[in-house]
Length: 204
Image (cartoon, rainbow, N blue to C red; front, top):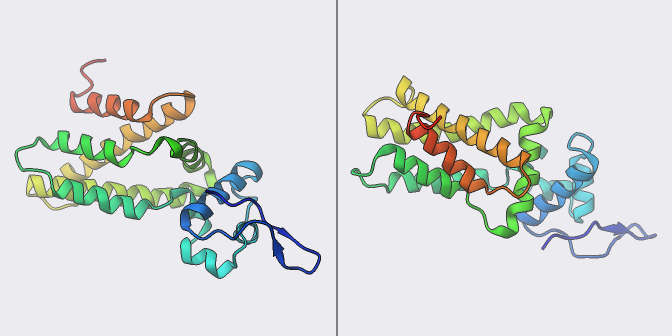
């Protein structure tokens, strides 16, 4: 549940709902503010004040304002890394990657609107592009590690890096399509895009 914006009484004390007490609550509140005011126009102090917390508490949840739209990205990456590591040796590499990426991008229905807000910010906010590049590199790194193990190659070799980059590319394309089409099924779009990649785009 997302806390409402907190108001300040005449004596300077905060009134209204309780302060944000989790990263998810703070993230949702910040996303609402970014949508209404704009990302660059909303400061950390604005978010902390609205959430009823101090600036220092904000930084216990997020290292920077730029990290807010990404949510628990690092935690989810670790889940995907574990999923890839648990795959059986007999399962085709591309099938493992396809399943892991679909799982990584499967969210509860209640998170659909928040995901759309997050991805709109990530993909369409110039101020976030440099930070997004670092996040994309982390995502590609997890894929490349898995491919390198399967291929018996260094993680920075061409094949692992190429596989990671192409999977990121088609995934971002699916997200862009999803943002343009209200009501579209994200997982279905990702599955279609990854299927095209797996077959060398022969269906086109």
